[in-house]
Length: 478
Image (tube, rainbow, N blue to C red; front, side):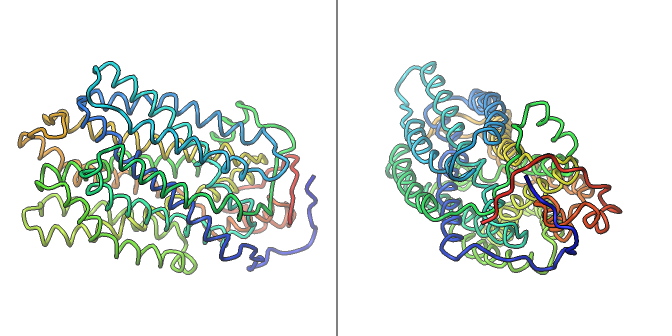
């Protein structure tokens, strides 16, 4: 049971523990995980369309597959908080995840084009559901792992931002490689290449990462407690509602291959656009960890969302006939995308600390399952909406299909104006998100028993209300 120290004001500096190689393996894991995501999460709808499944049916497959995914994520969050391994809380799950995600990625992309449509749909649903479950197995624990690696909020931010940085690089490299390699090796060939690359990069963390700051509720978390925790954690709800709206209306990654193939007339151009975006994305990503040491990360994220809103409107009216100007706006979009891709996943640990401070209950697995659920729900809704929209504009299924002008217009609207509308709604929602880094550090120290309730409230009560009496927890510090 945790013991509270009675008289130590919250210091501005907390000890750092994570070494360079350990942090590197965390980033490499995200690089590999996002290679898988670039393959499946961003291109599964293109695969389904290319083998002859219509856009409307693809939209239904992707959307309704997530009905099980919603249940799956919630269940897994509770399982994480209930099951107790002898060594570690999250690393055992991460080690278990490698084989399933590799196997089901290959199974999904082995979908043949020459079987009856009913069998195609069945194969697609089984493969996609199995892949999603495998992705949950690796996605939920990896995001919350830094909370067990260190109790220092700034160090957590650095680990998470580095992981997201390499994750963005993974998606970017995947996006560059996929169009050219797929055109020459086919869908199963690209799946083999990506799976090998991903597994090699995800493996080192299984031996290098160390859980030093394990906090376990002494009682198992129930579904009733889970829903109460969610309903009382207003900042978790606000942030993920905003993230969902932004992501669900961002169709760029879903339709980029279609845009290059049909609007620009050359699938290989998708690789060139990814290459053009690579340098600004890498540079921006490299500077984000340093920037958020000087500026609260929420302020930076809010500004990025507002910039995305304006950029989409301008891009739509500028068009893509002037290819040089189109490349300039592609670079600007890449800059904003890199910052957003890193920042958006840094807020869950903050919401977890607030939830513990506000409710007295520690439910890291549940909160991270919510993140995973929203992340995958966002990508699935985005893919479903994108396919539904271009289907309504007359999109024709088939890898070598000729598209009508209306379908080309639908693709361009989906890449520019529709995401801008979503970003505007998100900016309005984020106005109500009030958590800031300096306050979260105080919450973290109270939640881990380093300072008393009175000391925490002296700093936080005016902004966040009184601290809840903490439930019984076992805190292990190495």
